[in-house]
Image 1 (cartoon, helix red, strand yellow):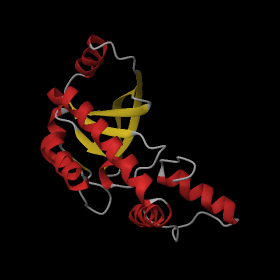
Image 2: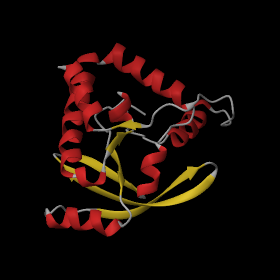
Image 3: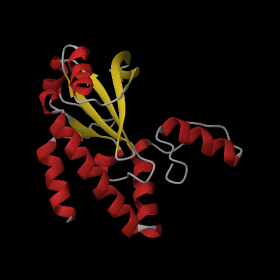
Image 4: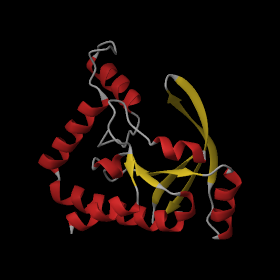
Length: 178
């Protein structure tokens, strides 16, 4: 995942199983185990450059979150949990009832963006979410749009751990790194 920029855990598991000549099975590592291995790899092989990359991505995420403040952004994914590398995108979860509001915000600022759809499983059921992506300073910023009601429920990863943090929490991470 680190070397090739693979961001999806399932894809990484399948590629690893194919490379090892084994069938992908339930004995494959869980997402949390993969995250721990990525952190250990980065700690051993490139601690300085990974820390610099992570700080750069977090500072860029903070700028994007300020710009997108009307949508109560949460930073999620590898930039939030500290496993980000040079290929990582910044993932923000936004909250609005109308996707047009996000489109107008980006368009009014002259930001070219891609629009797509992302499927997320919520309690075992697929949920289709509007998604947007744009580039800032050479980094892909991905936006997933949830409706306003979802904000009060909170976002959790598998295993119950918190999926992301707001700008105040991100600022705390940045201050601790400096």
